[in-house]
Image (tube, rainbow, N blue to C red; front, side):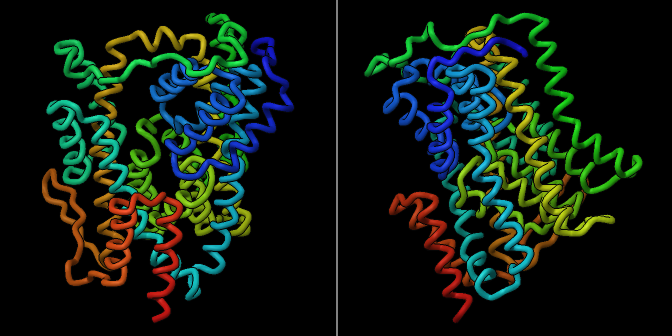
Length: 450
């Protein structure tokens, strides 16, 4: 046991609360964080607002879905490592079950008129939602011309030159670190200080769970976490007698992705789409958009779209296995290697949170990464738009250029019409993501039956 857990609230009661939270995790990280804040801070008053925001600031430093990591962190504060495990697993479980069921439905019935019509409306709605994410993130992040330049550079490097996503993100972090050391005011992020907790929490801060940081504790977490993380991939490799299979490819690729997912799901999806569509051929670009639509309309982190990608990839490359079994195993393996690092990051780093938050240079590096993320998501919006609004595309590879352009004559008027509707609903009427997706799916169904 890594440490002796202390329950500051009964474990059964906190487990029930996390289960109820998991059923409300629609609408992306902002909505998920709001649900946790309302439940834990405002209603149950188990944790103060300052401590909650303190935990969130640490989670935003990490790769991976910050809302799920925030659940692990606050679960750890309330009930130790067992509470963190329960909170993190329950946060993901409803989405895992739902995406798996929808993946099966898509493969079994995806060519029917009804399902095709629903996806006809879902795909352009996703484009509008991603555009909204670009606008929102840029307004919060790009508070200086230098940051605008970082975002524009990231977009060009990805969309025009085709550089790998991890390289762009690491470069942006290094640039932020350097700019922050030379001109600290440029990288300082304007944040309004907390005025204090409006209502005192029932559990005082000094009663929350804590652990003494030590090299021994960190080593044990790293060894155990790494062993659990690679175990299923290693098992797949051994069972295949060392041969390369879709399971080893997915385990290694998505496991590596889990270490570079700074900036949320939208940012990393550009990287996933580039590899899953172009390198591995697990699915088409249009199916990548549909998968994101499924993740947007189901509970859980948006990064659960990788489960849909893995299901299709394993189903279509099953080897000696039944395709349905291969699809299920591939999706579960991918979820495992994607989320195990989240638990390791929290359990390992929680005792060092204050030290991390006080590092000005680390904050500058993060600001640089977040600026680049705007460009990354903008590239994702362009990628989705090109492959959604047009039936055909063409590639231009000349020297450093690596461009994908639409064949302009192959535009699809019905998809463009639904995109216009989605943009009005999102930007003009300020509708929620879930409501917009539902209306656009029905509109696509209607157009397909005309």
